[in-house]
Image (cartoon, rainbow, N blue to C red; front, top):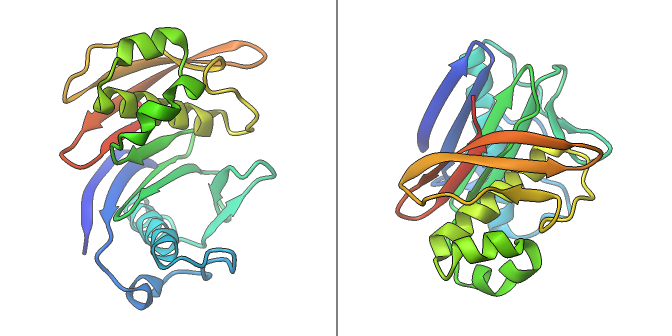
Length: 206
């Protein structure tokens, strides 16, 4: 099993990372449903299936039967037949899932890429740009944090540079981040990040 990491935070809370090493047929085992027709790329199909296999693993540890994943009108995912909220992320060959019974959660996994330096001025605030400098890893942490907050908010329509902001931080191998989601009111969220050799992970803190 390519389960890279599993963390159960409570009876019905947890997150995990999966490294895809299977074929589409192998990943389809025990999964309800098939990738939508609009997903044509082979890697995207594997990501779709692996995310559901990983959600299945988390459900099994929580004593829940996995019936699949449903989405609300905004595209926010939930466990089918349960109130549990979850967040999915994928950057081939990795997928990440976080599930929580009580609150909205977000998780994002990205592999650092130089192209982020080019698009950062459109999605980072001036303060964030100045703090990130030319460090691709720090840019990736900021980007993952914004994606995570976007998923926590769950209704879309937020501007990344002005409504999803992260306070400056000292880059370490792992640490905490303070984010502010500005919609009708300002919501403070605490995130955890970790830097691995080939990816960056940011998720909702406990």
